[in-house]
Length: 230
Ligand SMILES: [Zn+2]
Image 1 (tube, protein in one colour):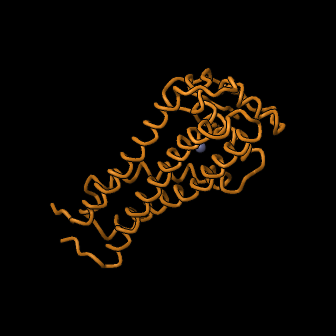
Image 2 (cartoon, rainbow, N blue to C red):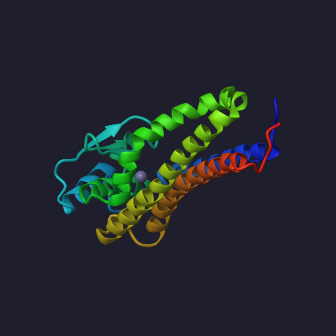
Image 3 (cartoon, helix red, strand yellow):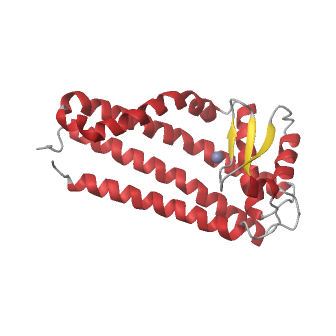
């Protein structure tokens, strides 16, 4: 068995980064899901309003269980909002709902990064399933064969996380614009609170990208002979 200090640094560094990012989004959400927006709209009403404004009539808005389980499902054209956001009138509920609508609008407008992301889901799922087997020892038994496979898998995951960034940042930018223009979230404290939830959520995607990039570069470096594994 061998332990490369750089590898441990990458593993623990990226783990710490992702724990920090998810702690930030949870704490921002816990705080601002308790702050009602004066507009009094629920997340579901806000989402319906945004879809109407964009002439989107074939997307269904549904409540779903779980905290922050909100997502847009492009294959079934369903906007799933966690119950807390579906029924809630908080600035966090409006922010998250508007963000998910951003994805529905991207889908309607054939926003390129979303198209790429949808196309890459299948291969990324496969790469993600292969990676644990490499870590279980295959890599160190036959590095010549499995090192390039591992690097390729992390490369695929890294590209997927990279494509995810414009998709998420664009959805958040759209959410902020529509919440401001419709007056659903008041300028000042309400907008700042809503923004801090959405910005914290965006940071989790940046953290995921950095993790995948660090792992990918690590294996590329070993392949290029920068580090010997003996
Ligand atoms: Zn999103």
